[in-house]
Amino acid sequence: MDLEKICKKVVEIAVETGRFVKETREQGGLSVEVKGKNDFVTKVDKMSQDRIVKGLEGLVPGAGFILEEEDALHERKKEFNWIVDPIDGTTNFIHGVAPHAVSIALAQNGEPVLGVVYEIAMDEVFYAWKGGGTRLNGKRVYVSETPKVADSLVATGFPYNDFSYLDPFMKSMDYFMKNSHGIRRLGSAATDLAYVSCGRYDSFYEYGLHAWDVAAGVVLIREAGGKVSDFNGENDFLFGGNIVAANGKLFDEMFDIINRIMVKKEF
Image (tube, rainbow, N blue to C red; front, top):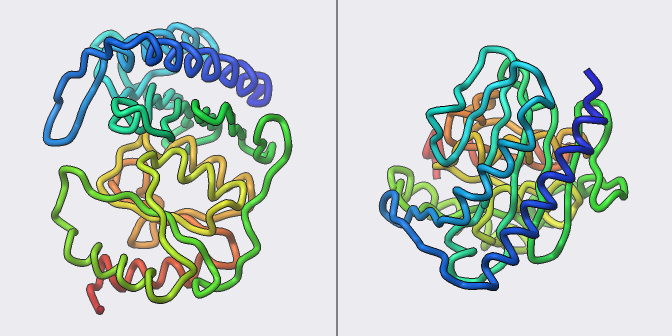
């Protein structure tokens, strides 16, 4: 399988879809629906997902789909699956706030092997395939070299409907406010992970996530020289609901802090 060739086609699909999203937003009339507490979907999400799925069909024969907006016509398959978030950061999108991004990944036997994140407002497309490195608008990028949390910029995402880890999460925020260069929250996990892959952020962690939030970003970070795991140090970040990511030099310290605060609750 030629992952490079497939990835370049996915880049085209993501960018075309992102520009459609932007044009539609500018025309108004978003038609917002509520899926759950602080969980929204717009007509644009659904239209964008349809465009993406149509473009992806046939790129990898027999591949299934894992979609944010459920679609009974497209099911998950055993070996290959496309993992799609048509607009990551829908709440930002509704309010006209950046960032919001198109996120597309291909997973083989549960391992992400290709990832594309197109951040719409900045017109930046991040993409990577297994063994091919990570690129931003065609230029090779790498994770940062920051060796210590004390010298790092940390990114996270705030819970919006799952408050089961709220107490330890607030303790983690307190820790990083006092023991790093600062903490940032953009509202798009896909964009956060992309920013780690190019060195803008040194690390990222969040809970309450889904496969479509993180799958593409995982490939970007790994291919840029970084590391990812779930809060337990395993590889269940796609479906386990939480993730910690950092450059290779910083990862062990970052993981230890997150594991101690969010899992062992030692703080």
